[in-house]
Amino acid sequence: YALAVSGSDLYAGGSFTTADGNPANCVAKWNGSAWSALGLGLNGDVYALAVSGTDLYVGGWFGTAGGSPSGDVAKWNGSAWSGMGSGPSGYVKALVMYSGELYVGGAFSTIGGKFSANLARGQFVNFAPDVTTSAATLVSLTTATLNGTVNPLGSVSTAQFEYGLNTYYGSTA
Image 1 (cartoon, one colour):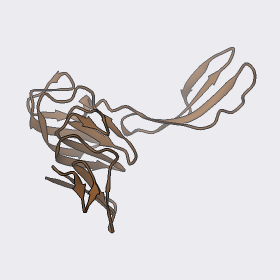
Image 2 (cartoon, one colour):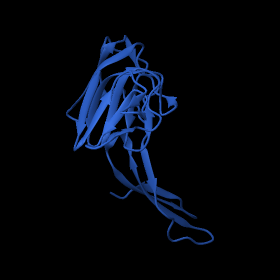
Image 3 (tube, one colour):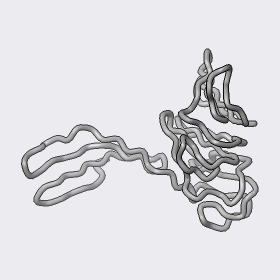
Image 4 (cartoon, one colour):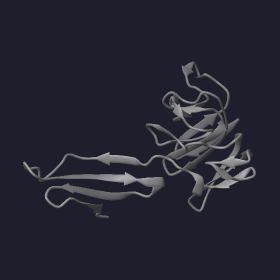
C-alpha cells in the first residue's frame, strides 16, 4: 500500500508477512540487494509511510509495533520501534513530514486524546526519546558523572548528570 525512500533504502508497507521469502510483518526494507524485516514489524496493515532523516514513520490499522502498543502510528529509528501513546480513534491513511512536523490523515475524530477531525499535526506525537549513555567518569566513593545524549522528538542534545554532595543535571550542548 505504501512506499518511502531514505537514502539508498526503499521501505514498503502493506498487508504481508514475508518479503522475498523472508519474514516481515507488514513493513520491510530493500537495501538494493535484499529485503529485511524491521524488528518484529506490525500486527496489522500499513497504509502510509514517511521519512525524516533516519526515522521511518508508519501509519495504518495496527495495535502494536515491535510487540509494543503503538496506536496506529509508530516510528522506526533504525533499530527499534516506538509508539505514540493512545493514537487515533480510527485508522491512519496518510503521513507526510513538512517543516519538521509529522502530519497524519485518516478516518479518526481524536488522536493522542485530543479532538482532531481526520487530520493532525505533529504536536500530538508523543514518541519516547532515544537515550544513549556512555561510561561514567569522575567516579569516586561519593560522586560520579554520567554523560550521554537525549533525542526528544528528533532534536539531539548532550546531557551530563552529576551525583554527589550537590546533585546537578542539565544540557551541555
